[in-house]
Each structure stands twice: as C-alpha cells, then as structure tokens.
Length: 209
Image (cartoon, rainbow, N blue to C red; front, side, top):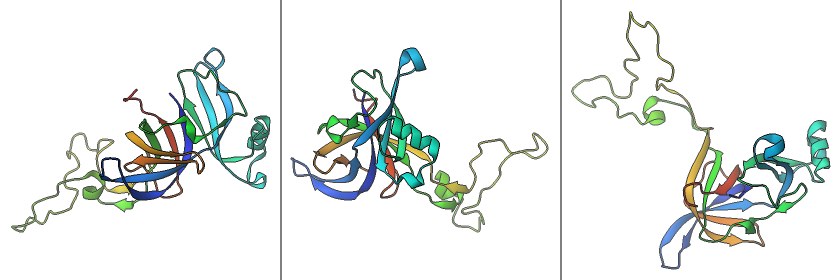
C-alpha cells in the first residue's frame, strides 16, 4: 500500500494506445512532506502523516507551526494521515513524489464531493416520483413519512429533502494512464470527487492488489 496527497486540476480527453477516446482527470500529486510516522509498537497502528501545498507562516497557528518546524517542513494547507501496512523506509522530513505510482496501476481516490445546496427527494435520493397523469396531484412530493398514532414520530435516517453534497466520497479502482514526473501530474481514467483545485487523497486500490 502507498499513497500521496494532491489537487484536482481538471478534466480532459485522451486517446489510448488502442485508439479509444476516454475521459480523464488531471491530478497534481505531490511533492508531499512526511510530517510524522506512526509505529505499531508506539501508536497501535502504522501510518504516515503527509503535508501538501505550502502556505504562509503568518496564516498558520503556532501549535501547527511548531509541528512543521519539528519536521523541518514549510507550513502545509492539506495535512492527512495515510494508513499503511508497514512504515519501513519512511522517515520524518522525507519528500514523496508522484513517481511512487506507475502507469497501469489502480488507485482509490478520496475527496469532498461538490455541494448541490438544498434539494428535493427525487434529486437527492433518486426517487421515482408519483404518477404524472390522471390528476394524481403527487408528482415530486415526499408523501407519507410514517404512521400516525404509533410510533408518533419519524424514524431516524428517513430519506427526506435536504442539503446535498459536500460529503467525503471515494471512487475505487481508477486506472493511471500517465505519470508526468516533471509536472507532478497523474492522469487518471474517469472522474474523481470535488471541484477543480479541491484536495484529494490517492491510495493504492484495496480491491486490485
């Protein structure tokens, strides 16, 4: 298992070797600074703490600034822990670049989905909706949400209209088509969560070892 932090640049199209036109996403992956290493004996789990995208010291609170200086790193905007089976070969202050991945590998990408605002049930939960004809008067409404006298309440988790999006989302088994070491770019087949310039976590695919 391996991982890196990055930023979604945007989407485009690309021709494969077989001549097929595919939709791809460009991701600026790394370089990332290793800010901490979690060991099984000391922390009961193994992980590395990565930082990505420099920011000004004046915009960093003092406790975080001390941690960055302890790791001999500039302040970072995006900091995340990535669980690993083993932390052998990693040390604080090390720099991880995009070349840890190769073309043809599969990755799982995690990000925050786009916000859709307040939405009705049909858009938010993909309801079918009521009859559209014969005067049903019930096209996109919620309808019944529970019994009356018993239990005299609405059960938790019931699908209702509400705020949609801005949720942690993971897309699995995305193939890497290109790796550009000079520009720190990953070209991934398909779509990833979030808007342009949103931060992403790229890990080795769990289901395709």
